[in-house]
Length: 153
Image (cartoon, rainbow, N blue to C red):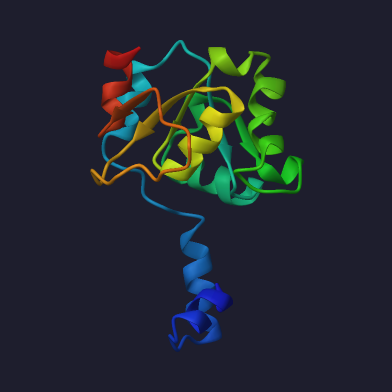
């Protein structure tokens, strides 16, 4: 956080930086998330994130999403970040499914490309109607909100 505010030439006190870091523990989920999770019940759902275990557990709990997920997988297990293939290898290892049997959903086009390069079936949730970065791998399907996932499966 300090590097970002310094690079952007933003003045921020230690208290303000602490407040920003605390916001990562309590982000608000998009309004369609709970309805989408309800529609996907029965499928083993997991999170695979660059976030820390503490941040992920707090965010999921804050949004009352804990019951929906079979696993919450942090990159802390392999001590590197996406788009490293070592990160994408975690879900098949933890869930016991080969990558091609896992639908990987991300709102980040770079993450969708990394997952596709690894071998997942990929769904890009393009909420902002942006353009996919040209990274050599395209998502198998693109949606604009999570509620479209059950329709696409």
